[in-house]
Structures are given as structure tokens and as C-alpha cells.
Amino acid sequence: MEKVVKLASENGILIFSKSTCCLCYAVQILFQELRVHPRVHEIDHDPEGKEIEKALLRMGCNGPVPAVFIGGKLVGSTNEVMSLHLSGSLIPLLKPYQASLS
Amino acid sequence: MNSTSTQFVPSRRMGIHEPIHQMAMWGDFKGLDTSPSMILEVEAKLDNQSEDTSHGIVGPSNKYDQEASKPADKVLRRLAQNREAARKSRMRKKAYVQQLESSKLRLIQLEQELDRARRQGLPVGGALDNSQLGYSGTTNPGITTFEMEYGRWVDEQNRQISDLKNALHSDIGDVELRLFVDSGMRHYFDLFTMKATAARCDVFYLMSGMWKTAAERFFFWIGGFRPSELLKVLLPHLEPLSEQQRLDLCNLGQSCQQAEDALSQGMEKLHQILAETVAARLLGDENYYQQIGAAIEKLDALVRFVGQADHLRQETLQQISRILTTRQAARGLLALGTYFQRLRDLSSHWSTHPRESA
Figure 1: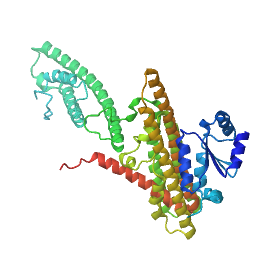
Figure 2: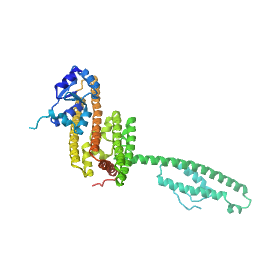
Figure 3: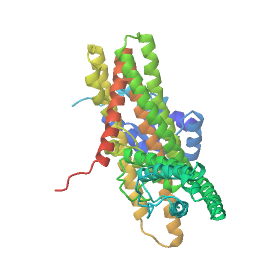
Figure 4: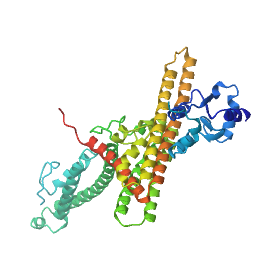
């Protein structure tokens, strides 16, 4: 879906979320802890929300939210993010976008 | 004659009166009011008594020969009556013994259930309170199945721990040891699969930890053990570690903690949202049902959280296994299994030993 691709390419780190989804909130907290500030797009506040949801499901996101994109590419949902983090592979992906230590 | 005294036979006179007393006694033991030891004691005594009865009648009785033929008919009739009474008595005894056998089996079953309940850490006393024993008294078949399967899981776990201990103390090679490690890991993963099914049946039950023992519940975090705790328990048992391993484990610990914190905060948000949903101002009956519906939707999120927490546990175990050598992993699994076993034992001791009053 165009909107999804467009938003993903415009933002270093993008999370598709729903305002009522607490797992989405958990993922946001994790990214904050890792010193990055992802763009969060609440699809329940988007008139095209339903299409976005279907598109995410088609892309393989089984939440369908949270759906995490890094550098324009789909990383996955909570499972994938957690696995990456525990294996030490998430931080290298986030490095270009991390806030510098002040 | 048998000189044993029993509280059930008022008279110790044998002979003709005995069968009648025995008939009265069979009738007394309708229910399971007597303790097992008393039942067995009575069984032994009655055994002796009926043997004596038949001895007294069937064998040659000098006493009766001496009376000559004068009251012969009476004697014969009495003999026949005795034989008949003894026969009936033996039949009744057979039925009674069968009843005892089935009661004994039932007793063993009850003792096993009690034992299981005590191991669960439920305060089980003399009176079995239905509300305490068997949280799954909600007759949710999925949960009943889960409880049964979990019981079997624990038994298998104990077996694996014992096998692992023997394997580590023997001189088996790494290839064979790897098999133990792999099956140990798979066993934990099986549990996560079981829990996922149970969570769909009743997520509150799973979150309550009622299926685990009391001490394990004390350490509970979103439906199970804390992954970060895992590493802390294992670390001392994994030495000696290489510098790279130490670094990898340290990083894993940090990532694990961060993931845990994120999930914990997500759970807090869920608490907050659910509380708001339930507390929202009611404007009328229709809104009440909408309210309940909205709240139930939020509860579905709980199922996802439990699944996520289990996923974190599984990933942590897998990462640890990748960082360690086979032998270290085997020692780690043994330490972990023993740790949980001790928590279970602690619970069972706690619930079966009365605490001293002040």
C-alpha cells in the first residue's frame, strides 16, 4: 500500500500503532529506553486505518500492530523486535538514529 | 477359641450365638466411617472368627456325640442351621471385603488428590473447602486439561533433572550430552505451547498462577518466571566462562531487563485502561453492556501479553544456549530445573508443616 511505503521511507524509525494497544506502548517504551524516538502512526486515528491494517497483515505483520519499520524496511511486530534485541541485533539497526549522549 | 476381643462383638461366647452377632456386624459397616487401620484390623479379626465358626461345626465334635440319640433331631437341626448361618456369613463377608477393597482404592485416590493440592501450596486442612481445592472447579475443560498436562509436565521435568544429573556425573561425551540439553530446552518450549492454549481458554487463570505452587507464585511475572531472574540463577553455575561469553551474557542480561521493563510498563497501561473502562460513568442499561463489551476486548490484550512474556522466556533460553558450550548449557539446565524443584518443595513444606503460634 502506497501510504505505508511512503510513511516508512519518510521516517527512519516508524511504528504503526493503535492508541488503545498496550503492546504498541510497550514497544515505544523499549525504543525510548534505547534512546531513539520513532514516529508513531496511530491507525485508529487515520481515516484510511482499515486499509493500512489490511496492508500490514498482507506484509506478514500478525498484530497487525505494532508494526515496526526501520530504514524503510519492515522489521516485524513485537516478537521480531524482542528477538532482535535479545540477540543483540536491534541496537546496530538503531545506531544511525540514536540520540547522541549529551 | 479365638480369644481376641473386639469392640464390635458384645459377647465373647462362641458357638451358636456367634453367627447372629456376625450378621449384626456386617450391617454396621455400611459406610466408610472407620479409619483404614481399623478396617484392616476388623477384617483380620472377622477372618479368624468365621474360621472358628466352621471349625466348630464341620469337624468332628465330641461334645455332640456324647449326647447320644435322645435330642438327635434337635441336634441335627441345630447343625444344619449353623451350617446355613456360616454359609450366609461367608457370603456376606465376601461382599463386605469387596466393598472394603473399592473403598481402599477410593481412599488412595483421595490421598493423591490431597497430596497434589498440598504440593500446590493450597492450605488444605481437615475440611476440604471447595473454593480452595481445585481452582479449575469452574469446570472449564480447557483448564482442567491444562492442569492435568502440567502435572505430567512437572513429573517429566523431575525425571529429566535426575537424568541430567546422572549424565553430568558420568563421562558421556558432548554429542550425547547435547541430546539431553536439546530435550530439556524442548520441554520448556512445550510448556509455553500449553500455556498459549490455556491462555485462550482463561487468561485470568493463567495470570493468577494458581496452577503453580505458592513459592513459585511469589516470583511470578506475567504468567511465569522473570527471564532476568533466570540469568541471575544460572550465572554462578556456568563458571568458568570465557571473556567473550561473559560479555555476551552481560549484554543479554541488559537486553532482557529492558524488554521486561517495556512489557511491565505496557501491562501497567493495560491496568489503567481497563480501570478507566470499568469505572466510566454509566448512562443507562445499554451503556452498561457496551461497557462490559469494551472491557472484555481489553482483556483480549492480556492474552497477547502472556504470549509475549512467554516468547521473551523462550528467546532468553535460546540465546543462553547459543552463548554456552554444551556442557555449560547442561549444567545451566540442571541448575534451573533444581531451582524450580526447590521452590516447589518449599511450597509443599510450607503448607504441610504447621507454623508455631506466638
